[in-house]
Image (cartoon, rainbow, N blue to C red; front, top):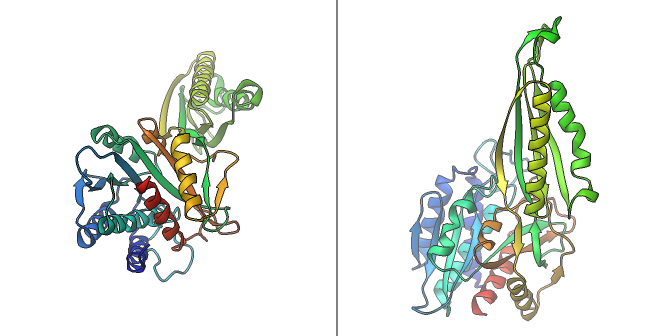
Length: 371
């Protein structure tokens, strides 16, 4: 990577870090990235509202490939002293999406200056943290006949600047599930005159270990109780409504759907027993992210050709990533560049994106663009 381009990318990363914005509110972030590309490249920019992409055109009949970066931040305080610390109280780039976007912008500089024999799309995506972004941006794949899409995520617990790959499922599917039950209130001295959801909700919670047992499922299946909110803080009134918040997660989407159906069926059965109304709602819905072997093999080839450190991952991440929306529609793969085995993990106060891994990521992307 050209030294000047790396310096520009690092400066951009620090500017993005100082102005973090949470999912679906990335107004300044998006415009700043657009302004950077307009200032430093001749690429065509297509603004799609909450997201955008830039295009390098190699010509008619050339294959079209894409590279994606996310740019939303987290609702967390900065937590550490940095020269480029967040200027927005309660919001910070604790997942490194500022680094992902600065990397993609730095890669765009290299392609704009040196050219390529493919049509290359630089996709800048909003709202990865909530799972909204990729589901909205996925139309881009079919609109432009994208033949393959690549991305990377910085990751701690991996050797510094190593490139980590896996075939098949790379991230579990997951969603937030709320089970709402409602009966009728009663005086606490006469609970039998009301309809209390506490026992029904307790039965659902009690059944979770059996529902997620390995003997009943294929691959990892998890159900995490996030919150139980029943009744009011009033000792004279028996509870009449309650919410059970769960995060359900599975290595395979089919298993996630089975778990969801089992939980809904159980909740409905318990609601009928206790004469309650029941409803369900869902948030933060993520697909399983599946890497195509053909695309992962290209990453392996580039890493070896450039003399970088290649690590074969032994298992998928439990955490979810909305990138899976893209690889449902076309070939593609995501790789992971190590921050260091003992480096603070993402989503912690001690974490800050490591600027030096941007050059590694750009070199991988450049190699993929020439295959």
